[in-house]
Amino acid sequence: MPQRSHQRFAEPIDWWQRVRGLFVDDWGLKLLALAITLVLWFMVSGRITQREVMVEAKPEGKPSPTFEVKDVVATPGKIKIQGPVNYLNEVEKLIVPISVEGRRESFDVSPAPLSTLDRNIQPLGTITVHVTIIASGNSTAKSPNTN
Image (cartoon, rainbow, N blue to C red; front, top):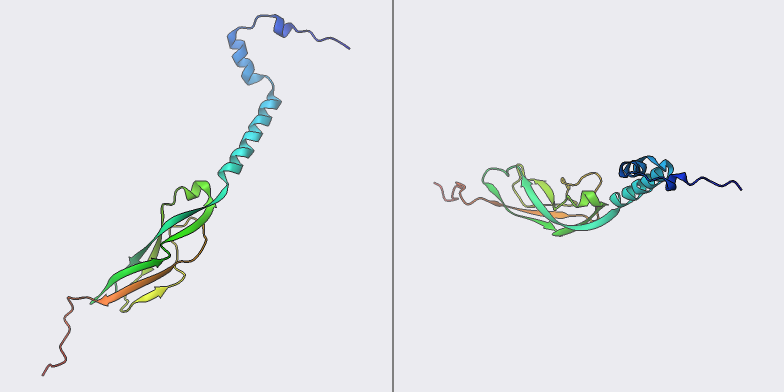
């Protein structure tokens, strides 16, 4: 069996050649390590998980004249959402937009639309919103006894 020359270890190597050798030698191993690192990074960053967030119903528009929005209640107050970890960390609460434009009476919306959700995030459940609309106190209503 032929013997290898171990001249590489016999000669003194200065520090610059050692540092250079870290980047230049063993390209195959370095590429393999890079591939493993990238696969692990994609697996961790794309991991799907769940998180519970608050729900806030927000009326949009104005009801009919002489009417006002008294109360807007979203049920349930919290909902679970599912998606990649990096997207879920950006969501603090869900906003449910409810149009009250031209309305004169209370109403329910079920299931309510969720406007703040990214396409990568899915809600795990539905939200019902009840909007209470009342006649405003400053209306100029005529009394029925007018002669």
